[in-house]
Image (cartoon, rainbow, N blue to C red; front, side, top):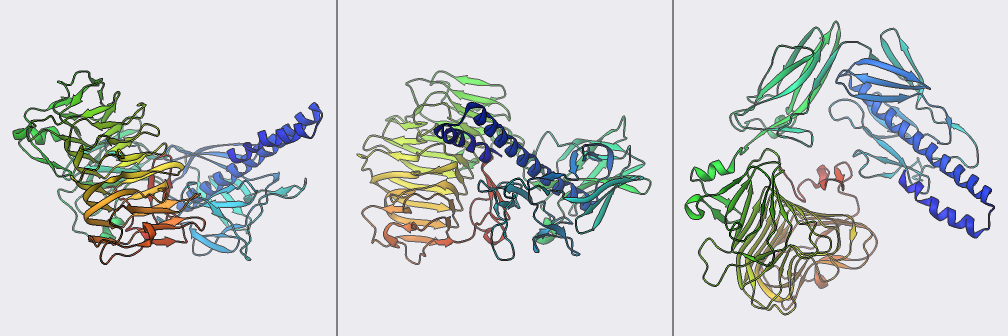
Length: 639
């Protein structure tokens, strides 16, 4: 655990200051290192054991083979995966009391903490905090909370001094005939069959598979490989029009062919949510091996360019894009770099896995429309190797002044300046839809520096934005007093930083005016705004702010979402309802600066005392944040 290791340099300094002998110092450091590594190994073994007992309880797999060494069993399962199971030894850890009750629920120190069996079962994961107390996670190690005893006191993880205690998770582990039998410390016994040559494994599909879900277009037929070994095998599918077949097994492999329903299922939501698994079952004698994969049917576009060429109008963030209007488009099916502005004036469809790079120095673009060509994986990339200067020109055509990106990774991470800058007075639209946006560290997404320049409509929807350092999405210079900004629309996005940042804004234009703003169903993680707000400027017509979720710890100052200059007491149209904020400490976080409510019928944001992601998903490494069922209506939701 890196938290323990991070103590070593500090302790080393203390030893030096104390004037320790070099050999004593080395011995002390080695002893501490060994102790830390021992604790890490023991915690790792406990978590492996938790995973192993969940597999045994699930009963959908068998053991194909196993090895045993120094009290640790390494099990190869019927789906090809491996797990480790350790009986335990004398060690330094004081084990929390973990059992399973008659209802198939985990019981931790006498308290039920979750279901252990069935489809809703979870696998708790344990950790030791820097102050050596037990912590437990219910979301795979993304967030942890303290383990408490019956008096609500934190539970110590280690003993004082050199006292050794048993860290054994199991009372007994042994192989009896063709069964692996484990006995917990409360004498409950569970077993898993050992069956050679029994295998059921659905290989992860190469197309349409993401975050554990296989997405297939309505009426589409797709395939993946399966690995099968046994006497008999078959596949079952969800209700609602799904079909699946298996080819003949050759050398332990077969082809699984799946066809999605021709249209959306008419099942109730409850039924549909419980019927999304495709199941492969293989038996050998009386034993069965099972593997599952989640499937979903949705409208999937295999080629947006084909729709464009067929005359269909694509509406992206209010911008209508059609062949009739824009002419022939370019299909980018291999990596391509634009080096001259004449090349950049067009509509580009970029295939999955392909990168279109903008490397035009000191020139301006009249328009830029880039669309990921397929819904089957958001892996098309638009890379900025140079800052893009937007230039509608003084005599624009109707198709000029639109800068649109959809369904691409927008990668500007290598820049040392802002991503885009307005070069002339009016830019009609800047739109990001279904994009993953990688910003340059500490630099802005779009800048309007000179007075009189503006963007009529700035739209960001269905995007994920990782922020590396304090920066702004739309930055206006202090001398920009334009009143021609019409709309800022920020809907269904995730904005996040891996560590808390202290000053991040969506719109920073304190001396400008904008007609309307919509801020709905966004998730903000680790982004503080200060009292100048996520939005700093003047709104003249309406504000919609609803169903946003803000999560921030280590809050360093009072915060607001809106800092409205010049109209703090005005009454605007719109609605400001159902916004939630989870924070730590006593510092304030308000919807509007000063606690004012300029929108008729609005309400203050709700400050939460419980973490909305406990029991949900909170993953800073991927930017995946799904609140628990209580707060499911808040924040961004991606299909």
